Image (cartoon, rainbow, N blue to C red; front, side):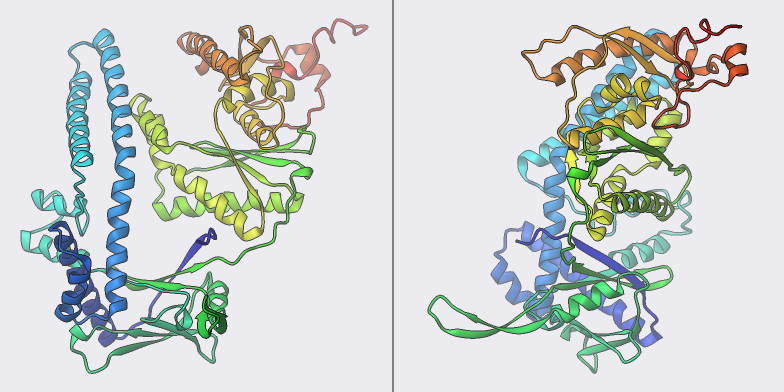
Length: 542
């Protein structure tokens, strides 16, 4: 099985009323067949029997039935694979909710917030019980048309519906708003049911095989002038890969068969009309980076991306901070902002010839954090999509030929704050990116100080003594103790109001001299105490 990624490109179709109604009918038949197939599969009817009956009942071709079946099996498999993660996620939510309730009972007994937390805890426990029951029984719950739209019928006025008939119209339209056309590498143009050809003007001409159950005068519909603003070259490359080759069987017989690249299509209807999504397998790209040149580390945060570049010995070369102002942005706007930042990072990797090192993050733990953080941070975390911030650098790196190294994220923030922040005059997030880059190169992560000076958000710092390291254990066991000890000074600093105070100003003599130490990196909010060496002012003659 190929390990190359599959990229999907989209464009909007320009249709006349007859073509639009034809696609509407195709989508309605496709949706009805898929819902019926799901009900029959749950009843335990054998798949071969279902295929024969569905070909006659809906007038489908064998390839169209396979597309419906594979799409349905994909939905079922995604639910089954996701359910264990949802169970663990619900357990984490419940644990955080119980901790929050315990704190509220001490600080705000009898408050409305405590009541709401208790209600939420009861809802989470009910949800967990339902998930565990479905997991044990193997039941799959699939709502065609989305559960969100289905529940809107119980509050029509709040959701902008004048009557139940208006909601039902939207519900039926949503359940029949798309259809999938499966491709294969051994078919002409990578697809038997929808074949694309290049027109003289450079656009694509799609020839879609319709279902016999539609009862139309023609079995095919032709869509002219299809152009993709982005991805046209990749689609043309996939179409040109189809060719006839001669292969030898196990018995020594020579046979002719077609090889190429599979091209799958998905037609989707929205409020503006119909769009087509084309999925093609990416072609391999030669690497332009080498680990001997160094590495570029990436630390993902909800409001910015911290980037640190090292040379081959692991020394810091430069850092960057790419802001992500995603609060209040739509999904497409957030995707564009993250994509632009990722392209800048990949461009830096390409110019320097260094691979990109990213963390292998657990997204379930990130979601559970929302239960126990303050409302401002919770809104910030909700606006940020960690999944996009992980997938987009990988996709951009693959296209540019940049190697991506994934590392364990354990203790990178602590290592960056303790080992690198004060030493290089950088912030904790830049220090974490530096630690990620060094881990990708396999360099040492031993503690370099005995007394840690860790910067805080307002430009100050907290100080604590590192615990004694047991050299018979892995170095991460030492960092686990450091992380536990780091929580106390941060908590004390926050309780004292230090996070809300401005940083300590420089002395008048220091401002008059303007003495600063040359640093390899000069980020925002650098620790001002590092601008000059201790005792340098006492050695001056005045």
